[in-house]
Amino acid sequence: MKTNPSRKTLVLNCGSSSVKYKVFEMPSERILAEGNLKRGAEQSFEDMLEEIFRIAGPDVDMTAHRVVHGADLFPASVLVTEEVMRRMESVSYLAPLHNPINLEGIRLAQRHYPSIPHAAVFDTSFHQTMPPTSYLYSIPYEYYERHKIRKYGFHGTSHRYVMGRASELMGMPADKLRLISCHIGNGVSVTAIRNGESYDTSMGLTPLAGVTMGTRSGNIDPAVIPYLERLEGIETDEVLRVLNHQSGLLGISGISNDIRDLLKIAKEGHERSQLALDLFVSKLHQYIGLYFARLNGADGIIFTAGVGENSPEIREKICQGLEFAGVYLDREANAAGSGERMISSAYSPCKVMVIPTNEEIVMARDAVELVENQPAWGTGRIAITV
Ligand code: ADP
Image (cartoon, rainbow, N blue to C red; front, top):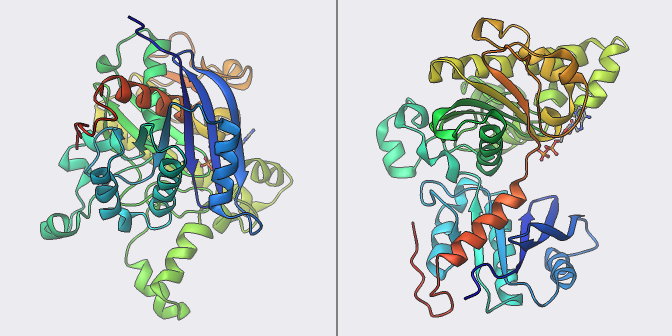
């Protein structure tokens, strides 16, 4: 019997400004094609996906789709059925900028490839292990019961991937480790990982919460919102737009949301760029400190995503002042090299690692695993694990 057939797997990440895709040969994980199509006025979303389907070819065996918000309905990735689609739609109101486009991508893939399985992989799934002390907001409990208002967390696929790699690098099983995973890109989230599971995370009901980000504010006093409405004479939607798109590094510096620009012009003496960088590091510092407390210490800190992987300056600034918790950076290892590596000194009780994230490979692996565990695929007898 052939146990591990080669399967062509199309991984899709349909976002509001771009569509990223990767075609893998599984289980070898060889990349057959990949790309990032920017969404513009000249090409419709449907045409973009048709182009990707053409590149992927007619012999695709399965697809895997990133879905941003699964609320508390999806603790793991699932194969898409009509019931799954209905459930995903029922929580789309929690991520109106993301979920509808994710679901549209699934529908188009189903239409183009009607006889193959399609998997949905959620940003929120990894964080479904958080205890209520982490996920509840201190507001009347009925709002949680009635409207599912709670912390969900995001970047789960990334945090899950780097946790696995950290466990390999440290030579310890993930369920024996306490890790603080810092996904620092344009969006930023920090996650406390205990026993191989998410225990707490910085993003909330939406990806607006937590630390300062490229253009998002992160946590602010909620009373700021009506105050701004009154003083600026603007509606809630406009305040939310400002908090999502004009805040964070961009809002403070008034110049850019890109760390590279800010580091450069701060060195040239631009004070608000320096302030933006200092504030950014200070908020990350606060969450890392918080998670040292939540985890009662940590065995490792992970840096990943655009900034986490590529900026030795930011990593160094974040680690400064964490010596109390046993964090000793090897400055040379931090500044040199690239790719996955340990950057703490050999005697540092808490290890520091750079781990390039790879959400796509997790998505492809999940899809293969789901299909292999669902031999009834195609007969309409799919067990839904939600
Ligand atoms: P997202 O997926 O959240 O859009 P990424 O993880 O791709 O973001 O990260 C993008 C960010 O990474 C950019 O805004 C940029 O600030 C930062 N970045 C990329 N390369 C570098 C670098 N060499 N040094 C500092 N920051 C970098």
